[in-house]
Length: 127
Image (tube, rainbow, N blue to C red; front, top):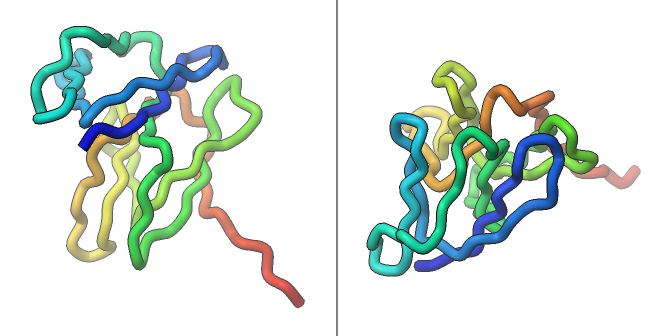
C-alpha cells in the first residue's frame, strides 16, 4: 500500500513529501519502493542530508506509547507511536511494537546524530 512519507532534511529545511510503499536503508543508501514492492527509480533520498523519514500519519496500535522526537533545527517535535525505542544501533533510532516480543517497526528512519531528545508524550489530565 502506497503511503505518504515526510522526509525531514538536516539543518531545518522544509520537509518533502514522497509517496512510497516503503523504504530500506543499507550501507548508507536508501532503497525506495513503489506499489507492488517494486524498486522506485524515479525518486531518491540522500542519506547524508536527511534527518528523519516518517509516515504521515505515523501508525498507532493498542499498547503503543506516543513519543515526541525533538530534532536539531526544528521548532516542533515529531510523534512516533511504539512500545519502546532503542538507540544502541547507530545510525538510527529503532522503534518496536511489544515490550516483550520486540517487533521492529519498519519505514521509520531517525538519524541519531540529529536527535536532541526523545520523551513520552503525556496527555493533559483534567482535574
